Image 1 (cartoon, rainbow, N blue to C red):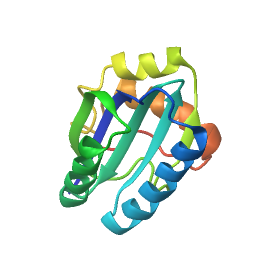
Image 2 (cartoon, rainbow, N blue to C red; image 1 turned 120 degrees about the vertical axis):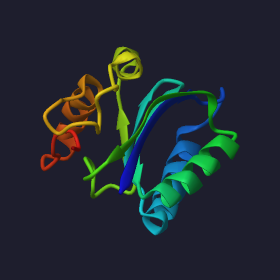
Image 3 (cartoon, helix red, strand yellow; image 1 turned 180 degrees about the horizontal axis):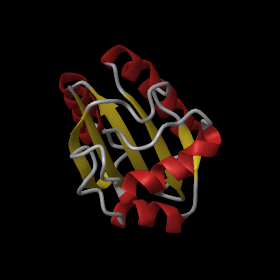
Length: 143
């Protein structure tokens, strides 16, 4: 069994692009070991991150995120069991986007995600449409 987790947070003022790249690189290395895949969308000072992993790997990564000084005002939008990964090949990737997009992801309906294969989640559909140009083989929402 896998779990999917998504959240939004704000980065501290003055966090440089170089530091963000370093955090993403270190996170990707850690995620590979923990069996975590996902994507990080950035708009100005706001993050939106989607993660998927076995429960123990996800718990470990979430602990690191909560302990990190790079995240403030963390808002959970998704925590659900899934059968298959939606972004299986990315230990972590960065996608620059606009504030409207991040707000749309935070406010999207995620309730049905992972519950039934026949029900699409508007939140996951929006995320997949944003990631698809960066990863043409991206599948739809996980069942």
